[in-house]
Structure formats: C-alpha cells, structure tokens
Image (cartoon, rainbow, N blue to C red):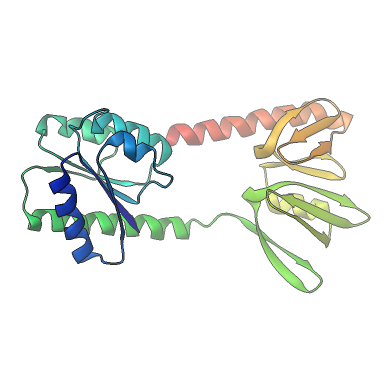
Length: 241
C-alpha cells in the first residue's frame, strides 16, 4: 500500500508522514512539494492526501488530471480553503480535511481511507478477469482472455498468440470461439481474432497489434458490423465510469 502526501508546506508533510508511519508502518510513504512533481511520479499512490492551494498548478486541477489516470485512488483533500468543498465531489474525493486539524482527526480519516482502499481491493479480486485453461504436454496453463491477441489452427494444433508469448495445444477452434465469447471473431476457418487488438483491416487481412489474420470474403461484412458493436460496447462502459 502506497500513501502519498502532496503539500508545499514542509512541516505538514513531515507531520502527516509521522502519523501515517505510526499507524501503518508497512505502508510506503511518498512526499511531494507540488502537484506538478506528483504528476511526474512513475506510480500513483493508492491513497493521496492533497493540498489545494499550492504554488504552480493548484490541487483541484491536479486531482482532475489524476482522475483521468486513476479512478480508484482514495483521495483526501487537506486544505485551509473550505470554499472548495463542493468541487471536491466532482473529482470523487473521499474526504475533505480542513486545516488546522488535530492528530486525532487525521488518524480517524486515515483509518477510514485505508478501509476504503482495502474494500476496493477485495471487490477487484472478486471481479476476476475471464480466463481459459489449455492443456499441452500434461501441463495446464491459465490464460487471461484479455491478453489473447488472436488464435490460429493448423493440422488440429491451435496456436494462441498472447501479448507476451505463443502457446500451442491440440483442440478445436470452434470450442475456443465459444469459450472466449463476443469480443472475439472468427474471420476465417483457421483464425480467431480479438477485436481489442485490431489495428486496421481490409477485405482479405486483419492487422493486429501483434501479427495478422486472414479474412474470408464472406465474413468481411459481418466482421465490420460486429467490430462496430464491440466499439460501441466499450464506449458505453467508459461513459458509465
């Protein structure tokens, strides 16, 4: 669990870091003196205590930019400016802590923020990504459907091309097609492609982020229709978020 403090008052950063370290010694604590410095971080924290009124880009603008990258981060504003309290809801803030505040007040909010983070993690674990199991040479391998770019079959041997490796096993591509569902399409009797990785296509070939697949003439029209439906599904999911 990584917890970050972003505040241009050094004393506040030191004070909050001590409070966090006392209650959660296992946590990784990061301190930033400006929002611009925070945005340059390679990894965004799980929990963020963010000041609003800072030199450079103010905390509210930083929060908006962070939310585009990370929608699950538990965000707590720590500021002396009460007038921003309603805007805090627009960026999904968990809480709004007004300076000056006591150690007891901060401890209470910190514990609640950690509980929120843990609850989100449990929910994420329950929503496990769809996977398939393939067996080759006596070894069973679990493969995430989201990582499969495309599959092809030759002489009863299926090759699954994932984002990182190729896996081979004997089977029926029609059964694989049923397992993987509507995000995949059978462009040719020997090829099954994942819409997610389509880069471009024409009436004879589908070009993917890794490799390419043949397109049967009779499949092209339906492929285009199903690809458009796939994109509409994902646009709808983004709007829901």
